[in-house]
Length: 197
Image (cartoon, rainbow, N blue to C red; front, side, top):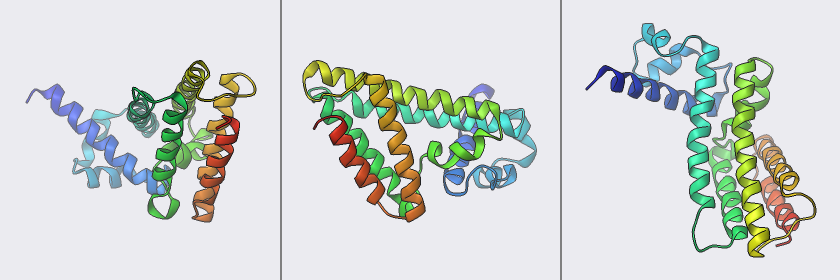
């Protein structure tokens, strides 16, 4: 195996391991040595893959959002379905993901958003870029729904997309606090009203 392939594979293993751990524990509570030990990577090799813990955090978020957006595109690009159905399937998938582990979810935007936004400018920007890309896709699907007649909105599609994302992010935080799906059920009902479904 070429060295570049090994390096890429090892880097990916470290990032995937860190995502799993940080989804449970947060960013500050996780040490680099914990991630490397669970990933089965020698402790001394961390700086071969990442310049600093800050760069590591940024890489985790970029990797997370790349995977998230690929999954999101898969849900929203279902051919033969009206845009409203595709969008509601996305919110249903969100609800299912956030219901895992007694409503502790697996969304790093929910878990790390408030924690790292004040700790690291590069991580804040990675979060901003990732969440903006999510809102872009929601807006595009709303616009498609307006064209195919499967939904309607009061206001601009971008504003509605942003409001929906903000609501679901907040509902996910509340689901974690209450360890209940009730906030996500409320978000589902409110979403249907905002889209006139």
